[in-house]
Image 1 (tube, rainbow, N blue to C red):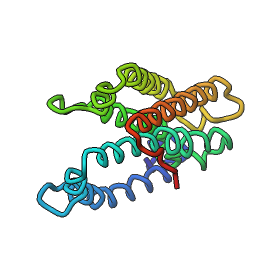
Image 2: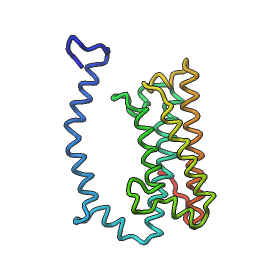
Image 3: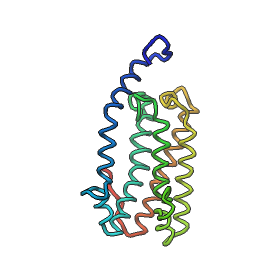
Image 4: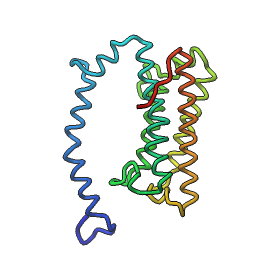
Length: 199
């Protein structure tokens, strides 16, 4: 990244990013593993011990917040509005386009209950009360996933004011994510839950 074969003008920045991430990653992975350790006082244990309605509330809250406020709002809308690379979600790694895809992949995996095909996803729980709503949410998440995959790297070019095609791709994804958020809120209300307020 920084020797005479480097071709990008920001090789030093990328090398610095990789060095920092390599130092932080083992500790962060250990924290995640500990949080889901079934033998410890982990979040996993507390989550599984909760009443089913509380578990559903937590899962739906996460899906709602990640769909609209986080991905559609802070991660996309802010950069879209400013067209400034500094507002890009992953401005140092130039990986924002993949971050958006992976966020939505995670939402879809929780909704459908994959890859653990032996269990059930949120879709199954919603479909037991309202099959049409479950199908609408599933289709919307799949559409958001398709739109996220259509983003062109690097993301800082997509947000530029002189790139109407890129901006149209981002705007379509933002609109889809906001619709997805609204549909998930409908599911929240279906179970008599209060729609979460984002802090």
